[in-house]
Image (cartoon, rainbow, N blue to C red):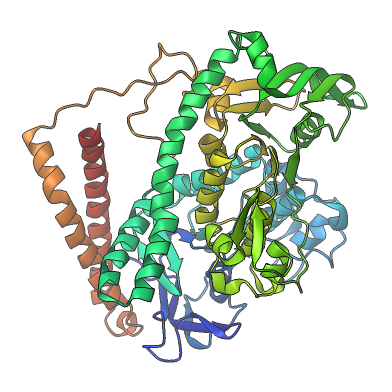
Length: 611
């Protein structure tokens, strides 16, 4: 028998900062009030732009924020736990004090059991703990409480790759329900089964994991653009900008991925052999003339520990270099060596005389809260010089997915993600031919990540990136420098998946989320070499028929699911007629299962057709 929801929001509306974030005072004042039902075992991705209200919605679910209208219902006995982005540890002496402090705190031995697996010393003073240590302590506290509904706000921020892998494994075995906000596409794709999309005050739900979100989003925006033809000119312009900012950008990025694969193939040809650190061209003189950073035999140790063992590297103008490894493996040290912020113990680092850099670090130096967006970008004026080109500040704001109307808004009112996006907008305007990004994806929404991918691809210079975001690296870098903690630096043409494949020879590089379906390597190809399109298999009569009729059947099933969910939205149904509630719930579950199978079948056929 289908189980009732463990949590529900019904008719939620909330006013914030003088505007209605969700819903409104009347049904015609704006977006519809929010309804949400969470069933046992739900695995939900919560998607939306920075400032859309994602974190606020999670706080409404926990009861930390009271809505202006609507009801919050929790099934008796349900334990809801919230993993915040930046929990306040200021009143705690140690990480353990934080983990076992406050209401509903877990026992110390339960925290220790999880902390041991995460590799965190809970006796560390809270005041001096790093971002990664604070994040692991918060995870240990949250998971040790054995929640029925777990709310995760950017859970992978500040985590290294090993900790992310551990968290993914834990959540894959977790029997409760969870809702997660994350910019980590790999994390979302692997774990979620349904998507909540918070967009302009409206919450949509689709029973498809994050892997199907982008196609759904583009379908919705395309429909809005068609509907805009019946509206006034102003709305047409807004709809066009909205579609251009999402679907067109992704289509352009598809082309950029093709170019990226070609650049990786070129770089693979420069690597002289497995385990060799020096990169070469067939004409070494030509390669040297294009080099902007030359590291010769550099190494660095702290005490008796070798952080970077001797290695050499030539970085060309236009290279996109990714640096990966566990926390403490030496990523930031290597970055500082390459940028000459730190002197090596042995060897030399030489920069081209024309090299000028901009660094955006993971600390995100706080922008002055009292300053306006206009002051941050254009020193209070109307125009900004963007790498030598004069642009109006309001037009530039649109380039970075801001509403131009925010130009005179104070920084302190912006969300954390919006502040990060504003910082990126300011730094990318500066004239430079070296861009250094230290954990650039923290606090950014998915659309800003698409934008960042585009800006990096179009950047006329060299890029150095330290990141734990696997998908982002696979979409942006041409060469990966991988550190395993022993001091050895692996140099691999390609992204994170290529480095992983080298570390584990039995593995093949994972296909990235937006890699073209025809880009399939064969065992005979050299690493990074251009792949040949696979021969397209012919469709049988049944295949062709399924390809044609399944979209209509999927729409029918979506209508059945929507009708059932509308019936279940009646708060009195479960109490007045539990048998009917169970029948409707079972019907929804069956329709979802059939729809999932139909979508998988149609996507497979679509790949065959497109191949």
